Image 1 (cartoon, rainbow, N blue to C red):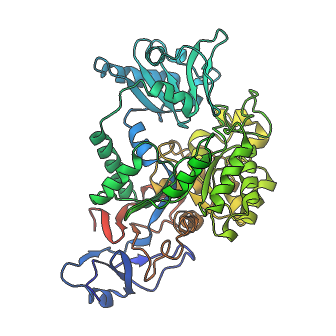
Image 2: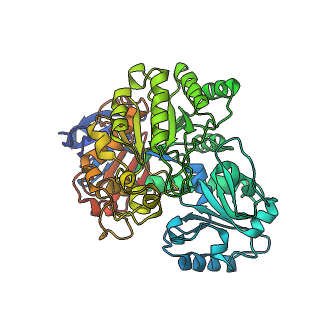
Image 3: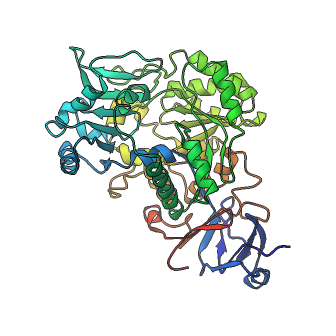
Length: 541
């Protein structure tokens, strides 16, 4: 047997399937997989010339953590602007924008992200609320959900947007009673009208941003991510980084299928599934059944308090169902963005019509699932559909007293059904956790902590929103290891610490399943290993 590439010893190996520790204290890695498990003496004895040996000093090692829903390329680009995610009031936002404006060079655009609609209170979300800061500069401010943005008057002028537009999907240039744009743009088709007018960074700069983001993700303990987009040249970027040895997170990529997709477009998506490299692959297709509750573009069974969120993202929902059926027959799993109860129900109906999920071998997913009634909860397990959830959205953007924009729009009944992680888990669904970065922070310890405490990370003294829907520490860990592997159809090669399994591993300074939830984000990540390659090493190992 060839010498192992890596040996880890003086470790405690945690099995997330049981919560127990394996009897072993060391492992060896050969050709990217775990080739031996045993005690320190046994495993160190197989090390040879060229073997990297790491003393973990008692660190707790788990299968590598996987984010079930993120956007690496889009997020790396979007977060290059001003971070408004910590702004709690309009004055906070104006102050941050005024500071950024002073740093602008002539002809530059001001970009910002993470704007929380709650800062507008009872006011309409409109550019005039940020006057006079933005009056004379082209500016694009992404709202936190990344489904909407505010464009300044100058940005609208440069883009030639001076009134309402008609789109093939549920999107809108919001206008006042006189037909003048307010600056609020809902969904991608509307946002792109103005984004196209803004200068874009060069290819080399974008590539380095993505590489840096992935390095930082590895340092947070991530070894994998389910990337829910493949826009522009993102697949080429992944390929370049992989070839150069700079891909530090294993990526499973699902390209988008938008309304209007015909048989040729679906066929191209099927053919794209064969594309990939050593550490990335196209596996699945991402679709949208609705937008977001906060901007009134979700699809609800009853309108929200403004009479909005009454339509599907696909103008003809039956066309979505046909596409899901075609992909299912081709063996391609789907991941459907469905936030409102009507959207989730239609996504499940479509999978059922296609022939069901897991029993057929095609593991379809529904992403987000922010509010659903009881009869919808039980259908996930019945149909074998993965529940991919981001409870940190509940933590960061809603409040226990339902005073936030999301809750006010829905009303008490539906706001009381927020992010039903516990109910879905108990009903037998496979729950996968993710961040939806850049919508919420990607560090996986924070994601798992949020699933447990359901409190705003900026003030953990505040009460939790729906603590009865919290997961346990072990369940949260399983949702980012065992369940993530199952969702990807990789349970025979990933999600466990066993001989023959991928050497994707994360080592911590404490047991992530038993550390109190509010302390979990501060647990040090001592080592991250991807396919036997060390992608992050703490100073203490």
